[in-house]
Image (cartoon, rainbow, N blue to C red; front, top):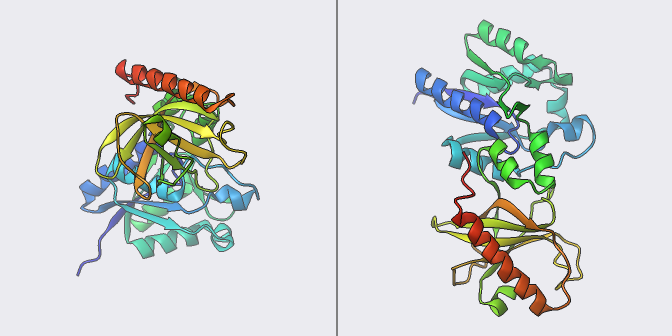
Length: 304
């Protein structure tokens, strides 16, 4: 059987924003042209975690990045390499040789600022020269700007931390999302007559500004529902400090515990605060629900 050829988009792709999208679309076009499979090669952890010894708070987990690449760009072949001390110290040519041979690469797509190998010495110009020697197609994608600003994961992280979801979603090209198994919680929704689902951000993934958001919840069967989502520690009903993501689903009845769901953030409504009583909290959530309904009724939430 003939081994499949791949055109690889190389990068970390945190957030899978519109700059990354330019690489992914180019990889698809090149693969079609070359009779190859469009593919993505990324790392499981951010290289800066090892290189600089810190921890970069990510927009998505590795599973989240793969889900967005598949859903938004239709690329199913997503490969993750473990970024180990060995990989960090590997000379860039050795790194390129290893992935070329292992993945049967016929084309490579990288961003203008991509680098690989020891001390990041494998920059775009060197990779272009390497590909020319090896008979591989190489595309280098120039910077992508929106509103005159460079589209970057770093800037999008700032927007999410500030709760500026409309802006973040424009730079992402899709709504910021969290996919998780639905967990059991305080059953506030049972008392209010609206189903409530609880989710958690994976370790290492940044938490948006604490507060209440107009959101949508997507179920595995494709159904989606407007939701009011609280990100925070729920000070009115809990003494704990673990950040919880609690969504009240509007116009849904049923039990979702244990099922998979995807939550999409659209609009920051208000900060989280402690209420004097459960009844006061319920009144505020009903008001938040009307705010969320009105937001989507105005045609908001569409990401260009």
